[in-house]
Length: 91
Image 1 (tube, rainbow, N blue to C red):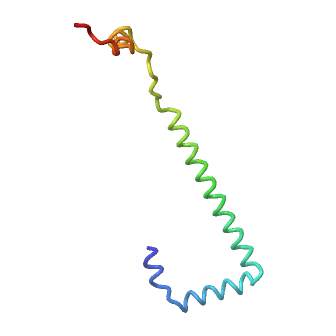
Image 2 (cartoon, rainbow, N blue to C red; image 1 turned 60 degrees about the horizontal axis):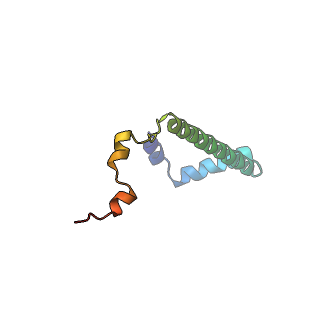
């Protein structure tokens, strides 16, 4: 639909629309309207960013964290200590 609308407007039609807007609102009102539109877009982007950050934070909080459990007794006995690994067998 947008492509069809854009294809229907030529260079002169766009100039005519801009002239009508200039006549209706005046030269002093157009910068104010543009400033208001720009600040509205800025606020919208800020709100969108904040919502995205909140969603990311909430999803990070709900994911289970992997807790490291202390080694079991069997694991402690199976691992050689430094004194055991440095001893050389006597023949």
